Image (cartoon, rainbow, N blue to C red; front, top):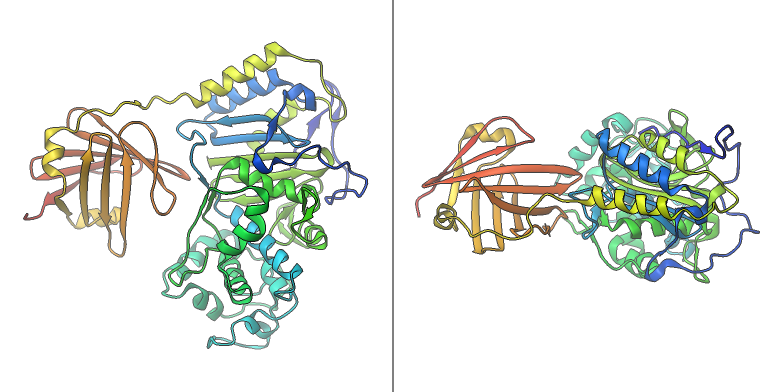
Length: 497
């Protein structure tokens, strides 16, 4: 989780490092010359002090070093300087932002508070009067909405290193809000940072109780709509509460708008979307969190930057001193791995660089190379064995419990498309997929595509946070499943028709 501050290079010999500075925009800061509601404008990197040739060189070096990026977006003074996509992600569908969602949840809490719909210093339990909550004591009764937003709620939790287990325990319950509220307390609220996803889901419940809308509906009306964010996917829990802790899917360019909003003090095109005092408070360090990093209200904070962060390496990071945003989606990334690219390319924080058409051409070529996809873009005919298997259910043995698979059914309505239904011990998933190289999103935002190879073998590529590849071979009354992501071969036998 630790994210080190970037050190920017001003010249070949002088390293410019920020001393302590305000992360809130100065009242004297000039207003943007346009608003990216309908889309970001672009500029050559040199116009904003970046060296395009250095960007190209280090972008390719990242790829050669095996850094698993999906996209990298660099914005300064409201202009996109770099918008790169790494195959197989091509930016044509929304990306899972993981716990970047938490920063959006707390932002919506700030908006609702500014509208008078909730009180940040009211106790959290007061917003659930119809629930019978377990393990209530003086500490839980003292916990406020602000404590939840600041990750200092005091709940029993695995905290930063064990949050996934805490989250899984909540998701294993039939009522996620109830399970999150029922947990015992382990300390007084407000005393110490403890990264806690269920606490953020409680905020989604508070939003719904106080606004009469789900978090997604409230976001659409009060945040996404004004910013021009129209395409997204956001999952819900068994009771229909929007997932306050994660799994919002956005286009990277849209995710960057939220940070741009904060760089402009919560104002957007003449309208104060988020209360100015909330923005100031949210990006102020309130508690030491991890390493040298601190936490505000839903945002990670260091001396020179603030950012939203999600598993796998999703980052939306702002450098207020430079009016710069770095937006990253990734399968597995330590943000420090971007340091060489940013160190080498940010040459002048105050003046444009001379035009460099050769460097721009090199950068465009590098971006095109990174986006090059080997997947065929023309569907092959459905093999006879797969046609015969279409609509049949294949049952797997006990060994497939290792991948939680008990049954699978394929349908091939045409040469261009297929559908697979996977039944596990407790879940049923339906994955539509294309066979022409494009990705199809399922209900939970997973992008899937297929192709035929080696005669009767179907290759399924599933993209979420990371890429998973499955191989399905059709043979008369059975299918054989293998994967690059788990060992072994699993056999499914056709059930009686």
